[in-house]
Length: 175
Image (cartoon, rainbow, N blue to C red; front, side, top):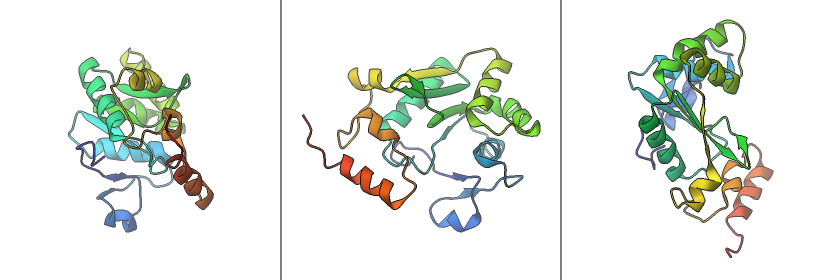
């Protein structure tokens, strides 16, 4: 977030993480990532917010910047990317106007982020904007500072073995 020139906050986390960035705590703990998204949107006056999971550290800042610029230019409520033809839940750029629909999803017991994004866009009457990462790379609009292929940007790093796998990505010879 900081490399993309944005202010980093930790949404839905516990206060002990405040050493890494300011924390926006859930209004109602235990509702998962969608609860954190709603808490963060409710706490800001900014029109647009970018959400990244902490377990995708290989995402390049150029992708985050492109998605935010695209959302602003198209005025889409929800902007995500796809990899290998599959829409990714994160990173996501959300317009603050999505908050009522996202909160309604939580209030009805639905906690899925992507389903919440779909409900928000349906309520507002526009589709989710899905941008193919491979197209962005081929067109030169985004790139990875270590020249990693786009599919590697989305490796989840949750365990020590995942971290080893991610480190190995950076050691591949580049053709």
